[in-house]
Length: 211
Image 1 (cartoon, one colour):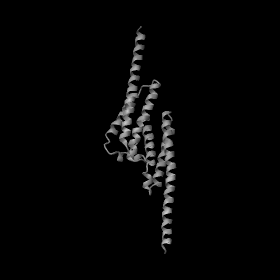
Image 2: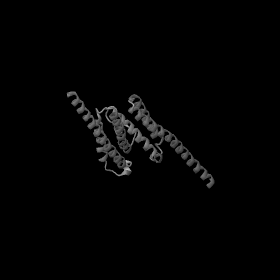
Image 3: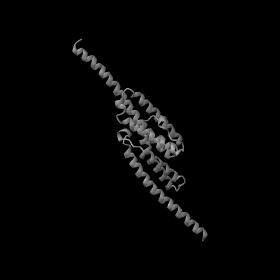
Image 4: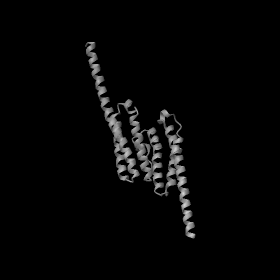
């Protein structure tokens, strides 16, 4: 066999490999976008109190992430390129937020199709959704359970700040933890003002009742 013929055989094998890799990448990118969309919609559904719908979307997101894992089983360079990790983080955030709002046990790492770093980063981003929920409740004059919500945010932060590993391992968790801390400090201030205002209103009503 001539060198020309040998090269044709080699090229054929390489091109087939690239074709399979490209197909897996394109399909995974589409699924990654769908997981992110489902996760965002699930979070919005939770804010609206549509818990059944949110649960369905979270389940669908988990199924798609498992499909991504299957597609990229033989292509670790694509799986760890970044876009899959982003989808995993968004899915973790949606499922964690759902569990907290429903007063359910938090999903374990083993129960979700996500890596450890993405679980922790999803946990950190759930803090922002808890702030939104708490502020919405305050605006509606509903302060019952607000301090418990703030405590949940604190508990998440205390876990995150205890993670003492390089960013290369944790997916830049330190930055996410700093953002969570800032969100919690702002939320604590907002809640303190709301509680003081509520106490003042109660005091004024009690005073009016005595007159």
